[in-house]
Length: 349
Image 1 (tube, rainbow, N blue to C red):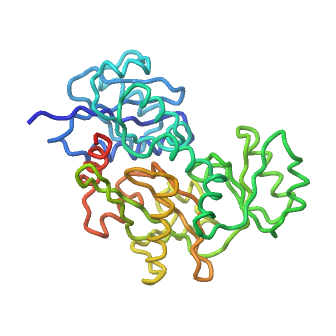
Image 2 (cartoon, helix red, strand yellow):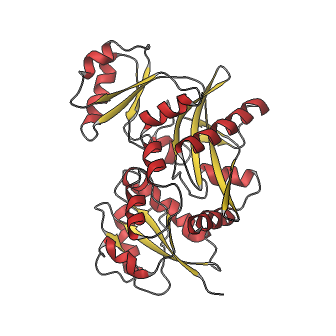
Image 3 (cartoon, one colour):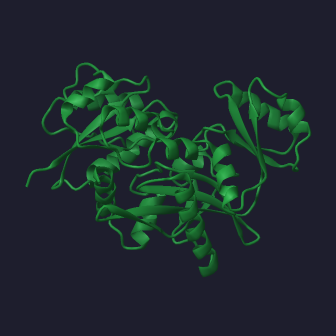
């Protein structure tokens, strides 16, 4: 049986580069080898493309390695002497690209638009859904229009209104939560109990970002729930998984809590009761649909006084063997090899 040739894009220029390497190691190891001939394409932190030149590409185990150590081993084992121009991927005859990227330019629609321009289908959401989900301010506006609870929020934009004045006169009370509007994986996020603390965080974000989301801090139970799509002929059937409760050992589920072993406790399925579980499943589907997501997504919530407040939707969520969606799929008896096949089949339809 002839195999379908696909590219696995990983790495990237976002702050989640190393997470993408870990996720894609699991993806590469799990994809159905009887159906797909998978070529891993490494995008380094400078945006250069490194494409294997051997017939059976190798994906080194990234465990315990720095980004530099991994990239050196990847290039050595795959006999790559120099980076390729991004446009050269068109000559490889890929039927589809599996996106193992996270955050920034990997998740905000830019790589999706590039692949569309090159005529290469890809897994996951398209340009618009990816951009909307990454833009937490506009995503929140959309969530509100369909009746999903969102904590009070506003946005600060560098070079416009005086941020200090705004933070001193918020329409909601402190404590608040501050994060880059277009950020991911809780990088440069934090809680502020006063306007002074808030301004320190905003100044830090403004060093590299132009927009900051300011939101009333809602305390409660942190949960996350995935949505998968299964191909049915030429149609796609979306369904919610089960929620995971996240109990970070730090003050909130920050970058370290997400990606440091033992820094948080994750319970799947979340012990939140049948009624709340059904509400989370309904809300996650609605978030997936209002943004126009495709293939899969994961939406994070805070449950406070029995009400799930949406935090954000991720269009390319973490995909290591212990990430949340694999946990949730496993709880329902769904094999991740099948999930990856569904994603590729949807991209090819």
